[in-house]
Image (cartoon, rainbow, N blue to C red; front, side):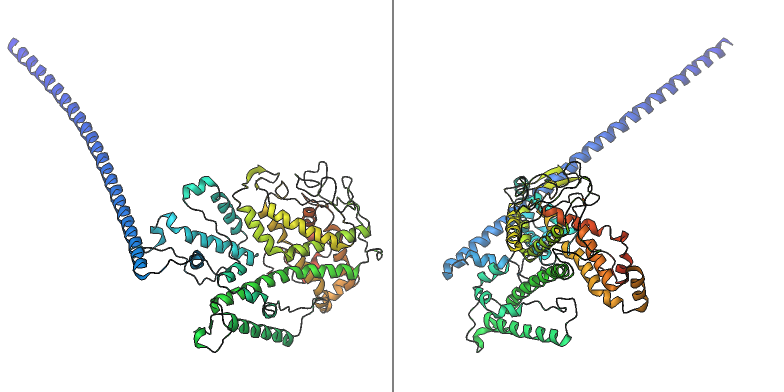
Length: 560
């Protein structure tokens, strides 16, 4: 029995030792596996780093080869110049090749693609600096397109100008290596490059670019044969100018034609674009001025400055926080310059929800008349103001500040060029008025009411938008009343067609110029704000349904 116990105890001890050895081996194998994984990760990192270095080295070699190729090309060009004895083209000719044409931005006869090597199939393969000319051209086209087509790019243009504003910063320009800015291409400098300025002095250009109106001054349609005759005469003058001033006639070289008067180097296509650009600009101005002229005409025909018809007085009685506009040619002591909300939205204690001006009938008549004539002058010079606004926004000498103006954060920036033009137009209107100026002469620019030139230009492009529907309704009352049911409605609600017209005119001439609005008042900017504020309340007017019967759907956007 002792032997059995001894053997059993020895066997159990042997099993325990075997079990312990197995656990030790498992631990060692796990440790070795972890070490192997760490070694594998380190090796993969070294391999990736080596691959990145090899890739960078390859890119550097490619750049070096490309640079050597460019140097060889330059040497080859110099060698050819030396052999042939030719001189490099003058700077103005080089600029001419890079410039776009001077018409609407969707027309472009010049090649704006940057010079590339035969192996490059896309500008995306080039460095940003190599695409400088391309970016400058496309941004210039966008800016120019907005000037000629103010109703387009309404959401995009602001973003485009903000982007360009930031790239005008010296820090960003240095990081890019080039600037995205390029001067707007204008008709006169473009013609001057080709020695074709004589066409601007030709009287036939006036008839070739004239605006053919389809309605007379009273809103009535002009006979179709008269309109077609004017269009035909325009085309004749355009062909005469193209034949005389372009370097080719119908695509043929001038030297092969009998036209001995041709002396310019400009092509027929480029000259056609110049004429079309002038025509488009005149058409935009005429279409914007037309509703203002019609409103002035309606004011003068239906109201008398010194007396008024019973029930149709323009007298204003403002709220308790109102103030009366003074007859001061130069405004108040704070007028004539720029200030943070001078009698605008910063005028403390003023209620902007209702009328804030107190005027007699005669004073209000003069106030409206002067305001409409000022708007007319602004619209006639709108293209000049667009170019000045572009210069002010993208100025490298005057940057913007991001400030809270009471309507969120805005880019506040001075507008010296726009301000100069506006002061000139205001002075011109004041002299032409023939009577003391009613209200303030303060022009808000670069302050909390009008933070920058972009806000200014956007506000004044709205004038035709809210005047045109009013004019169309007034001129269309007789047309809609040809329907017996609508005629009965107008008679029952307003008494007559004339009473409906007078109700609308009295309401607009009073409450479209009553100083209401967040930055309203009698200042230059406040007059426009009051009119825009009036449009927001038209749905509450008793004549709103009559507007709807005439096809009215809103003051903004496409009226469809």
